[in-house]
Amino acid sequence: MTGPLTTRLATLCADLASQVDPQAAGQLRQVRRRLGEPIRVAIAGRLKAGKSTLVNALIGRRVAPTAVGECTRVVTRFRYGPADRVDVVCRDGARHSLPLDEDGMIPRRLGVPLSRVGYVDVTLTSAPLTELTVVDTPGLESADAVVDGRARAAVGGAPFDDGIDADSTAEVAAAEAVVYVFTQAVRADDVQALEAFRSATARLASTPINALGVFGKVDTLAGGAGDPWPVAVPLAERQSALLARTVADVIPVAGLLAETARAGRLTDADTAALRQLAAAPDLAVLLASVDLFRDRPSPVDRDRRERLLALLDLYGVGFAVAQLTTDPRMGTAELVRRLTAASGFPRLEATLERTFRWRADAIKAGWALTRLSGLAGHAGDDSTREALRDAVDRLLRDPGYHRLRLLQAAQRVATGVVPMPVEWAQELTRLATSEDARWILRLPDAGPAELAAAAVRAANRWRAYAVAGAGPAQSRVAQVAQRGFHLLAQRVAGDGPRNARVTT
Ligand SMILES: Nc1nc2c(ncn2[C@@H]2O[C@H](COP(=O)(O)OP(=O)(O)OP(=O)(O)O)[C@@H](O)[C@H]2O)c(=O)[nH]1
Ligand SMILES: [Mg+2]
Image (tube, rainbow, N blue to C red; front, side, top):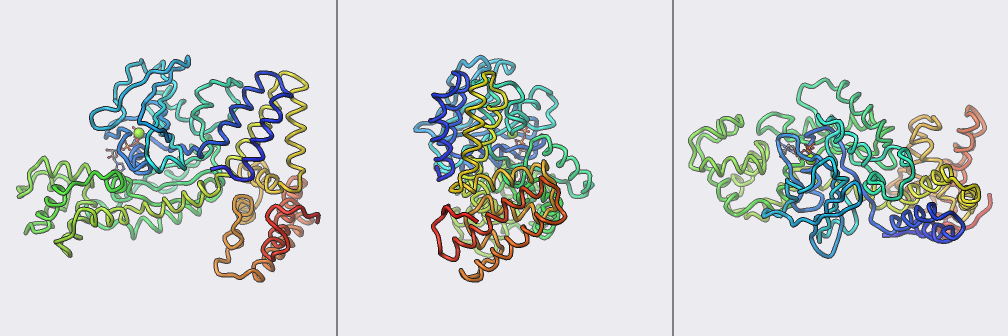
């Protein structure tokens, strides 16, 4: 899980530990430990957006409770471990272990008053967690102000706002990356929804480097069993363009279908019931509304219909029935495969892979760098402050680690500290967070010569930008970008290994 940048920072933390005061040394150990762990992604968003449902889909197991009423009340971290285990971690550091309930889910009653709970630490043997730690959060508009505050702490905020307490629960729960889930009712006012999203994400300090938007519950967009995708795709694209400064992309997903399919919840009996429904003469009426589906007489009993609604909702039922109408002999496994595809989840997975897992080295290194700078700013002891500042400066000047400078520059632009036109900001983000020249330069089919030429052109554009029309802060950023594109040009042209020491 570690890459060259995180390895370098881990070494730096180890080297520094002997030069700083004990409190800072504790912080450094913590940063170092985090650098070796999988990237931590918080799932954030408003109340009832479908966050926990998405968490279950990501883990491939239904462990996080989901419900129609407000449900997740404490920050819950899911990470890989050798055995399934639920620990309630109290604010005072005490841990209480609980078994999963009979359904394999986190028990609703934690056995500790909510006011005492810091977070819930869940370890699971699920394979997807080996590469991604997932943090489920309470809804951001929770009726309960305390819960809302916890959600904010978990998904970022300024890491040192609460003072530097090595054991603070905010620190433990804080994530390096955020998936922000939002939904939109069919006729909800677009602009209003986006403004709300923007003001919420501004407080979460999310940037296109570390944040991804999910347009959730898209299956409900068309109302009933209609196909939502012709509406969902262009809507998500528009949202993605509007939110270009906040998130890397906006992906439309029907989380419920993804959860049901990926957590293996659909049984052969469910498939048999869906097949029966496919043969019903009044199918169109049944699928016209949730109420009709529930209440009409049907060969499939009520409990089963209720279960199908809970698993698939009306669109999912309609989709499954349509598949079984075309191919009545289709088995559960094939149906599940098609439901996964229909949920839009594969695209989310691919984007997560590209945005987070693949960038994990850069994101984690950037996170650690910010942490170290923050520590340097807050250390009480003069020599500790100096040692930390000096180490960070030296690292950033090291030509072998030019990517760290790029990352720092990209973070300054992405967070708005240095304002820059959005296309420039996006190009810088791509350069800072990827090694893939084709993706950085948006030339998916180009050969080395064409890539090298494009990288040189980009370097020249940034040089022109640095010289003309930019303030001093933009100029400094542009110089770093120019250098980055020069190094990229050399790398793709084959005259130097990655991170080659080159002076330009
Ligand atoms: N139709 C449909 N329903 C969904 C989808 N995702 C979630 N739901 C339902 O919406 C309700 C809320 O889902 P949760 O996952 O609990 O939402 P949450 O954001 O975790 O809610 P809180 O933790 O209370 O903030 C549940 O009844 C889910 O089954 C979806 O993609 N489509
Ligand atoms: Mg929840």
